[in-house]
Each structure stands twice: as C-alpha cells, then as structure tokens.
Picture (tube, rainbow, N blue to C red):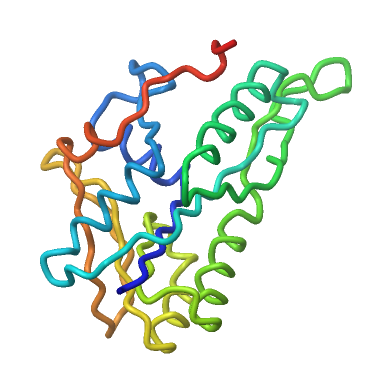
Length: 208
C-alpha cells in the first residue's frame, strides 16, 4: 500500500478555480468552492496509472476562520462548511482566525476591514514537513501554487517522499504551478471537467 496524504490550501484552490474557469467579477461568491474529500479521491485516482496500490489516508484542509468583524452570517456559514467537511471520513480542517486590517475610517475609528489569512501557509508547511519526518505518508499531494511551501516540499523530498502538486488549468488562463529548481515534481493540471467533478455550489450561509 502506498499511503497518500492530500494537503489543500483552500483559498489558493478556490481563487484559482474562479480565475481559471469563471469571471470573478460576475460569478456568485460560491463559485470556486470544492468538496475536499472528492478532490482528494480524484487526486489519488489520477496517480493510479503508475501506482495502483495508492490509498488515500488523509485530506487536510487549510483555511482561515472568520472572526466577529466578518459578521455572524459569515461565521455561521464557515462553521457549517467546516462541520460538513469533517463529517466525512479522512478529512480534517486546519484553521486559524482571520486577521483584520482597517481599510476605511469614520470619525477616527475603523469602519471597514480587510480580512487576511495569517499563519495558514506556515501550518500547512509544518504538517507537510513533520509528516514526512515522522513517516506519516508515502506520497504528499500539495494542492496549491504558493511558493512559500517550497521549503516544506524540499524537506519531504529529502526524506524520500514522493511529492505531487495540483492546480487548475485552462487554455485561456494557463495555470501557475509550484516549482522547485532542479527537482522534478509531477503536477496534476486539473481542467474544467475535473473542477465539475469536485465543485461545491452550496451556500452555507443560508443553510439552517
């Protein structure tokens, strides 16, 4: 058995899908969302042609968690989405509360805020690197194009692990993939048909 662990940089994947397959200015905010377990199973299956003994053992999802400044609707929606993911086998959510920077002021006080993810990439990098060191997987599939993950991928490769990457691709908007000079990484270039297999159009902010 070849143990496959999938690491999903969720916002990187979500915005990548919006840019590759949609129109971010017109599409509903739900466009780009995916079902993590379904994506994990797809990525595991795509490598079976060279290794039929692959078995998915974990799908880790990394995403910021809305705080009070995002409002109760966003907080409740994220909580429902996270719960729906973790109700599925193999899936775990790794999150940190979003940080907020003021972008507008009124009467000397912030009136608008910009939410930012902080520490999510570090958390993901640590899990990739420590998982390799502790022999928690044989293959790591990194669903992200964030170059901040390169050092962690190098640690995994140096530990003798196979590392694959995944990102969306379209002819109109060629994908940006994770690369390491001098190292060969197998990248899963996922087209719109693959996106349709894993997309999630649910609006969790409206679910009871």
